[in-house]
Length: 428
Image (cartoon, rainbow, N blue to C red; front, side, top):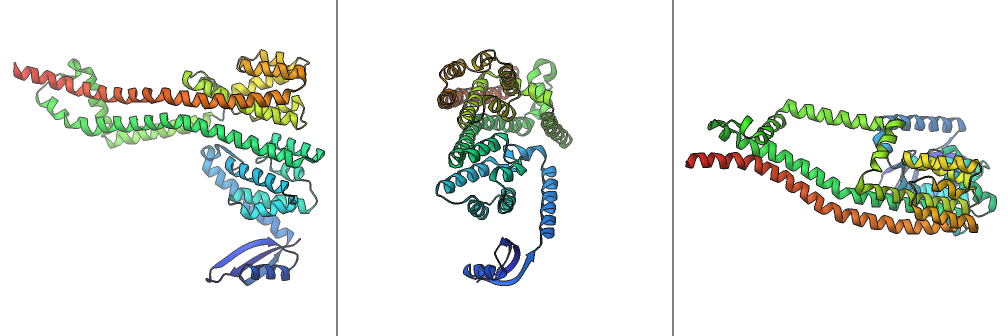
């Protein structure tokens, strides 16, 4: 079907431009009139022009991504937020269950989607489908958006004629994973807020209030350096924080440290080191492990129940794990199973997997119901994540209050002790 570029005017006189597929120029004119648009210019786009447009858009997007850097790639796939992927998958499922054809679904979603990157992907999917490609072949051209697990399940769905069920499972996986991420963010939001508040409070006390007391100490000739070392330290910090050069130097150090840390995360050994530290933090390790296990159990259940082999499922989940320590554990299990060892014995050798998960894998392997057992494990682990978030939040609240109290206490002690000492000397 030919593609036309059009320019039209609405009732308010506003000019709108766009590109749309239509059987003919006359059909497009009818469509524009139905939308109460007055055509100004309509021209057909040749395949060569369309190819050049796609290349130009890809170039612009690559340049944009390079400018954004690593910061913009968090929680996205191919520049598309997980929320947009979840919306696409859920809407696709709903319309598939309603009986719409795949090309019609893509057309509808193209009109509904606001994310420009996803819109471009949908446009290319529609083009490939019109040329006779299967949905898997069309999606496989966008592996930065649709990962191996997504594509494998779509392949199984196409081969078995169960695409609605497969997309339902994919939508559930993405939505559940997003729910876990939201819980992790909510668990860390309060501590981060208190830490930021503590930093601001420290700055205000040292850089704003403390300078008012420095002339008093200097006027009475007190040996602050030797008699009151804490006060001397606070005064030195005050001078640094009130000096524009000191502030600029501190800001540069913080920015460079942040950039170095982000770049370091791209190095496998450094990423493994930081992931290992995260799994050793007493307050957060249990929450991180439970959330990783929940995602693993659910995805493993849905993959195997969809017809994907255990080995393929392990390989995909190893690639998709966000924690290097967990990823390496899954790969070791994959290698042992490939060598002929049982699934449960392979999991037993990895201490990172909770005993409950290992036991359910053993029961599932013996009874031939591994998918059902892993789904039950994921439900249980979801509840454990909720419990861990609640426990962490309730524990962090008093801890953060103590931190704020310590900051204020140190400041008061550093200021009041010299003042009280001076008052005592004056009375004598």
